[in-house]
Length: 194
Length: 208
Image 1 (cartoon, rainbow over the protein chains, first blue to last red):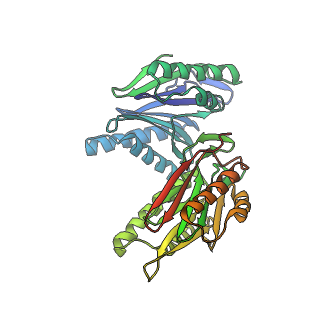
Image 2 (cartoon, rainbow over the protein chains, first blue to last red; image 1 turned 135 degrees about the vertical axis):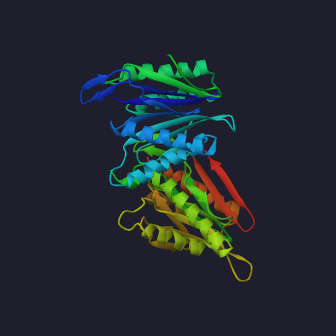
Image 3 (cartoon, chains in turn brown, orange; image 1 turned 45 degrees about the horizontal axis):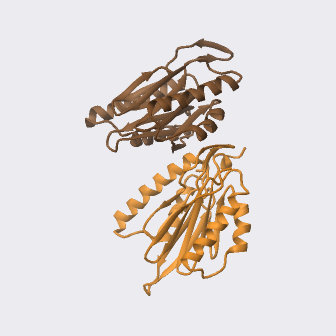
């Protein structure tokens, strides 16, 4: 089942999402990228109803880009997260709501702080040191309660993420095989291997 | 599964002698799974009014933004700050506007209103999710631990408490009530509003 994790550390946010695109009991694809780079210092992992996810993620991506073109500077993570939340909250009470869950991780270039927001399809937004969506969250959150360190280096952060991935692989009946992992820090966004 | 219990959380407000207190827990969950232990549900409205918004997480944020907008508009138009009683009716009408598709929030309001003699009068109020107001003389409760809060508050509250005593009373009431509720807890925040200051404290709670 779909799973995504994210955690903050000293000057960075790691965002990880599984790469399977499943339909019913069948794996259709095993290299799907479910983390969008929506601005130079902002990452968004999305999961939920197939179709809604990509549609909503692209809608967000284009609007964040439009803001940047109009104003010549990008939205900061907190502002971007608030805008995304509002879009989902408005959508919830519309005729066809998006059912998309998000992890928005970014590096605030003004305050030099990593920021992570947990947002669900209802438009519930919360600022968290670490978060997860999907069945994996039941295993990962308790693990992260024990091992998460906001002052950890990138290597330590990735090691903690590896623990989460391994735990889900070990205990979840229908665990995802592979994950895509992206990091955002002062230098911007990049993909890493675990 | 009730939508009012989906994210969990509780708020309480109490009256003291020329002061009021409002307190809430800090949990945000998805049913039984806790997501955050730092989710604020109590927000300042003016220097003398606070509002607590327990209920569905998405509507906590939406209503906070909505109230902020309406308070700003009121302040600009009237060229003065809103009085607690007026604010209570603003909350009520905002909620009743959505009578047939409500925001799943039961707001709690705590504030000090000015008297003609230059003193202050404590005011607390609670509303249901469609804006039915309840102005109480002693305390008001809302959220998933409301039944427990009501019982403990009934036992601990007494009239004319000084700010520090009111702080102790509301803190003990909240902390002990949320320990009996699976959907509330994980720390608490307390605000005591007095004539010339606001005392805000974050409390540690049981993390289980």
